[in-house]
Length: 237
Image (tube, rainbow, N blue to C red; front, side, top):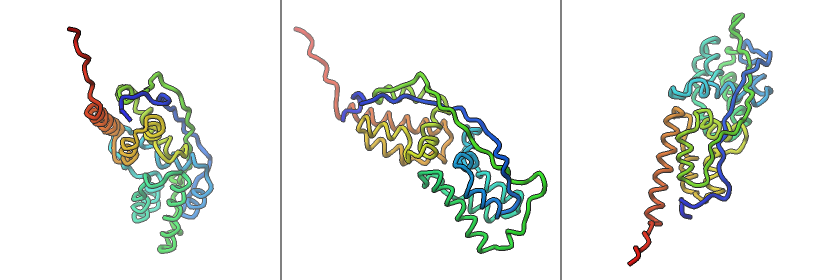
């Protein structure tokens, strides 16, 4: 399909506002941490693995997730902290899958190092479980073709970019970012959709991620113009 054609449905850019809530749950050792990781709502797991990306969007990921940081700094289990840090979040399409991987990592570690269960955090240094509550809002930006999509990408806020690349893929259980889904479903731009889906957003700052996506879109527009050159109408004699 000509990349400059109109989409079946326009892409409407959204953004989000996130609030952090206390759950009242806390852990003082690995067993308590493991038990709660298995049972808390998905919004809790999401918060402790993603809030850094929202709060420090101009710094380079990958920061330690909260679980990795706590077991390293307050339980002294640096090896487990490294294992948790090495979990490749992009490989998991849902919070459930990510939760299960975190839990298995702790379980395997405890089997190998059973004495790790004997370490307790001191009062005031417990792991306190928090959760993210998100409110999704539409923005005035929308796109019906690739040119409009590129223009909107240049204008939307980092939070809008975060919502469509991170939140929609993982927390809303789409398994794919919003941009790739729209490009494939509404513009039949499967190759471009796949290229964006293949990006690991956790290795970019949000601004670098924006720049990278825009460059991919620009390249596709240029290719389309070569495939479908605009032939000027003949001048009247």
